[in-house]
Image (cartoon, rainbow, N blue to C red):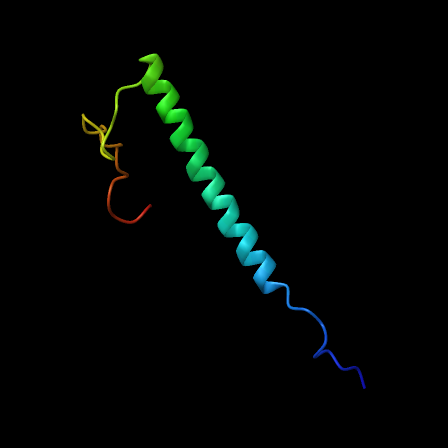
Length: 65
């Protein structure tokens, strides 16, 4: 019988690599935004759009005949 209690779990490296990738992505996004603001290419936004996005056309309701 095979004893797999000595086998290492792959969960922790997967979680750490996922969290690391997310952190790197956040840092890169902040650096790009800061550089764009320093160049004057993009206005600073506080999470929301300054003007609302136009609503897409919705499909008509009801059954398709």
